[in-house]
Image (tube, rainbow, N blue to C red; front, side, top):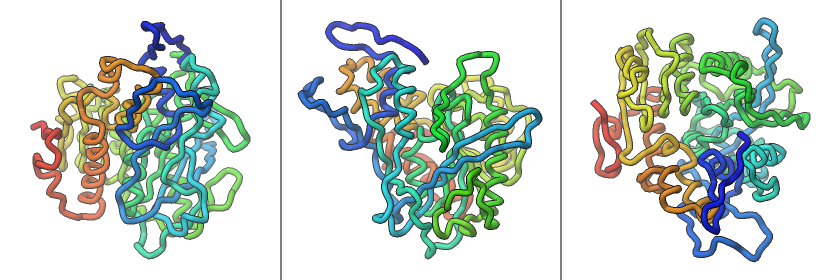
Length: 395
């Protein structure tokens, strides 16, 4: 990811990858849609952004776990995951960082930015808070990130689901992720194309994590060092109701997991290229959120032709690839700090209003999983809704 910002007038012009990297590493403190009139501040404090909080009735807890997969031939694969869940007594626990502070210098250096330009953001999740016991067992949703990403890229969706009573498991796909292990090792995406991970590798990671979550549900501690788990977590998970969603490469991985593993009952693919091409029928509920990778792409059209169960294809007018991720909320704020032009910002977020994009991210994944994991009728998925004028149902 190494790159050098190009001069643009008297401003620093960030490339797309540089700007996203910076957005992922600046902490939350200003409202969505924040804009300022000054591009420079006399204060030495780093610029701070905010991620929209969840709307559900429950506060959110989270815990990171370190897993080791020794089942693959010739490999000892390490993964970092996080479990997000409805919590109680959150005031006793600190808010979780969006990304490990030790990872921040690597992210910024890979973008050609000073390592101390920003501080790590916080989330709405509280580390180690007890799981809420009064709402019954929790449906489980797996999350797979995009290429050269990390498990926090869709925190808006993750927090929203957890605040409505889901347990959400997010996974860093080591060698294609920015991550930190408990012993302090920082790992970054491999740059060697010959060693690059594909969606099948992502899918293998998810299936391994599912196995470890199943062990957790029976009372085992899957963490490599058996660190203390949040109170009430064991026994709180309902493995008869598992869903999955992913963005970009993680969207393709979602499809591959569903083909191979009947434990996953419903899948949501967020703008995935669907390569390798899917050629096997899938008879479980599936939702496509498309933007750059529409059914004009042969691989996406091929997947659509093999969806034999409940299916929908939704697309937001003016959306681009990152519009269903946290970037849509962060980039307008970062644009002020970085001195981006309106044109450069549109390249990131399209013409979809950021506040409306956040509402789409919060409403539609929740409605989909509520319908198919909780059997709660969702009129939002029946057709166009005047409350969401940007969302098209693609026939």
